[in-house]
Amino acid sequence: MPKILIASCPPAGHIAPLLNVARGLVARGDTVTVLTSARHADKIRATGAEPRPLPLGADYDDSALDAELPGRAETSGIARINFDVENIFVRPLPHQFNALRELLADNDYDAILTDAFFLGALPLLLDETATRPPILSYTTTPLFLTSRDTAPGGPGIAPMPGALGRVRNRLLTAVVQNVLLRPAHRAANRMLAALGLPPLPVFVLDCGVLADRVIVPTIPEFEYHRSDLPDHVRFVGAVNPLPSDDFTAPPWWDVLHSGRPVVHVTQGTIDNADLSRLIEPTIEALAGENVTVIVTTGGRPLSQLRMPLPANTFAARYLPHDVLLPMVDVMVTNGGYGAVQRALSDGVPLVVAGHTEDKPEVAARVEYFGAGVNLRTGTPTPAEVRRAVLAILGNTSYRDNAGRLQGAYAERDGVTEIAALVDEVIAERQPSVSR
Image 1 (cartoon, rainbow, N blue to C red):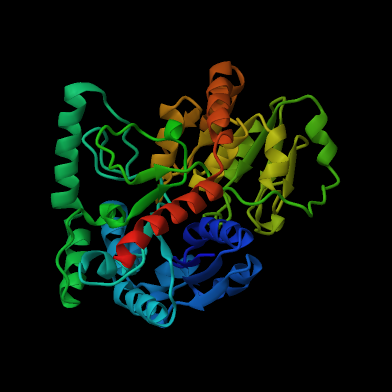
Image 2 (cartoon, rainbow, N blue to C red):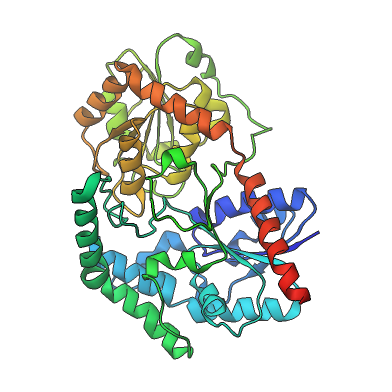
């Protein structure tokens, strides 16, 4: 069976879905090695894969970036994006590449599956003389790939049809790539030049397209249409965690069967340090409504909730979504890509309030495809949350559109389709190797 190397940046949002893929590859008999932060070693072993730690220069704690990177806390908006690309993704590049090179020297891997922001794979992709296995790039965000049919990724600008829309897209792309994010692109090229490599033939945020396959872990029905999409970009469906098998229901679980609409609010497991941004406004917003509110704090102690829970509200540190979501009528979320797709996989419409990382793009897609309400802020007021939730409960079109997407998700198994792509690129490489 194939020997597969998975390489990922340290953040949980990058490695978590790839661990689901690792588990699936191991289950079919593949030998899998995972190169990422040493702190994920136990989770990697739990999948049956072998962990390999990134060197110190490429490892970092994403929960403490402001402390580890002086000056980051003073940035925001475009300045933050440039800062993060240069310091979080470009600067580790040579250390990531050295780790890859050492593993390739000692192991005969059949394929490499990388997080799209693991830029240490670029030297292998740009050096035409390099002997390497096929490389597949996995996008951990909505597809940001430059296109004449879409605005640049980041701010959550929805597509505009027709010739006018293409003119708008071309102008916005030129401004973003040649002015606003030029520092990020130049930082990547400076690093490549220091390694004796040619400059990027594409914009830095598009560099995943240089791989043999680009894996997009969603359905085409939840991504903007691009008439110029490269042929090697493949949609595989959502990559969801395995169903839970050790769930113990909390004492209040029966309230979910009371007949009242169920509203679930979460800030995920990463961007949840300040529960006053979304969870507390939602609790306040719905305290007097005829709904049941289910709060999860993403592992944070319930004592971090700074307000008493109303009679219609119940909280837990964590509840498995495969158990909870089939009983939920509306989910209020800060827009994590995985959590939103998990909700849509169960046909649950959403209220999305997120403005960091890729969350504006996730929220924009929820709105564009009619599956929920985009609040266009990461810190909504209780009144804004209340209006959005009641709008969804009072308009069946949101549930209908979410149900349509649910059907599309059900037709795909992300891990199985990724495994098939791995086999595909290996089979393509074997004839040329034998020649």
